Image (cartoon, rainbow, N blue to C red; front, side, top):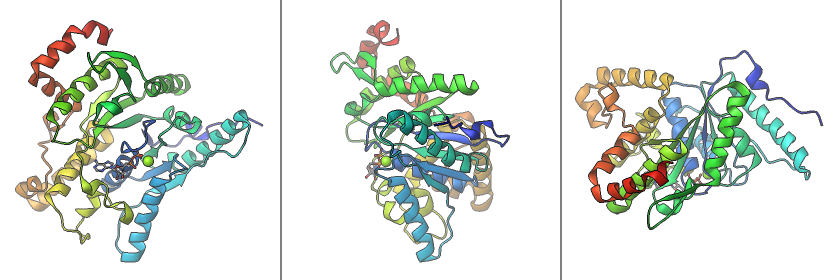
Length: 344
Ligand SMILES: Nc1ncnc2c1ncn2[C@@H]1O[C@H](COP(=O)(O)OP(=O)(O)O)[C@@H](O)[C@H]1O
Ligand SMILES: [Mg+2]
């Protein structure tokens, strides 16, 4: 079989910024994060393509389809992404299957790569060839992890007693390999961002420990930490309607806006800012000015958009984690004493 090329990389189009949402664990919030990112980017006026690589669960595909049906049934106008799903190859031979999947991925990507501003790709919760391939095309990788030590092992094995990092996980190694692949292919670099999901205020001690270990891991393994999403019913209850917290706050929505919606919207905006992508920052700045002009600064603030436009307004996850570190001397000292082992 002739080796297919990944044509989109060779075209003269203005390439889309590719965001991969990945973590080889299921249930950590990949699809939820993907859909919220897609809608946030659409609502900033960007054209967005999305690809579902989790062809077994197809949660993103169903989410987008539910959205299409809500638009059709209720006659509301909402921005839609251009969606594609890439199925696994039916070939038995591993080599044939890989070439076939390369081709399938190339076709899906080429359909949106030159014509959209962003392509957001949802991946399955296990290690597949397609998922690795997609990671190597990323400009940004976002890895949501549930806010518990159980889920940290997707990044590294951590000694529960000493909090010492024993070794990076397979997923961290996959990201590292794909960074190499990307560099070799087009000298590009990948920005890897880890976001903690389902943050709860109940277990403050666990939260602080998670902050510290995540910070140490970020230094050791080479990712940035983004402000995450809290545990909120509204992040999961809108799936059947194909909606996100950002749609609920639209003027055409008939869902009653609660304080939780306002806070959740701010979390999504904070995630967007953490991505540190100039195109997004410029649009958000313009949007904030529009909001201020349209509704007055006080209303804008009541809607939860706390941003003065300076860098200080950017809730960089690292700054947050750093602040948490300063709070708890005992654990900081313990980590400091392990520093040689952790940072080496
Ligand atoms: N921040 C959150 N608050 C509440 N529920 C969440 C949150 N993030 C994800 N969920 C829920 O957790 C489950 C798994 O999330 P999902 O996005 O499907 O994960 P994945 O794609 O990684 O398997 C879903 O029921 C989803 O609605
Ligand atoms: Mg999923």
